[in-house]
Length: 241
Image (cartoon, rainbow, N blue to C red):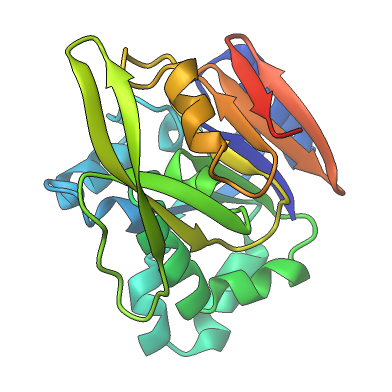
């Protein structure tokens, strides 16, 4: 599987060019399936999923001009004959995996059976946005105001103090296991605001046992045959190299 792991979708021409290169043909000649699952644990998740599907979200993805676009809902897959949904996945050129809660997404990637299909999809392009990118790691971390509750997942957590203009804030850093397609972690949205700055990303990355890319919304990580390339018109930093 080819990977394009973004912070905020296809946000600039360099990332778009990287996507076309991975597809090996124009977007207008490519089919895609959109995975909204990660957004549902958040308030307003259903509406945010619709905005993304209809091309009205702030992170460009579904509105790029795909030849065909479908929706793949991971929570529904266990109730569907695998031959039906797996055939649709094998036939598509790209999987577009939306942002939200990466712990929740990782759970459903594995328990839906989709992650188990990844090794048989060498030509499929996986495009992650935020949580959709984070979940491709083996071990990863995400910060929460309270530890998430995801049935069946074994999670570890610790307090971590971040700084912001108003002072310090203590959050819960939750450790989980993703799909394991890459041997590094991703911290998205760096420099999005004063809370998501490089100093806080460094504190976060220090708790992770793997190299960690902190990327802003103008940056993506491209992975092809194990080769990692940073595609950026913005800023990024690699920790624990």
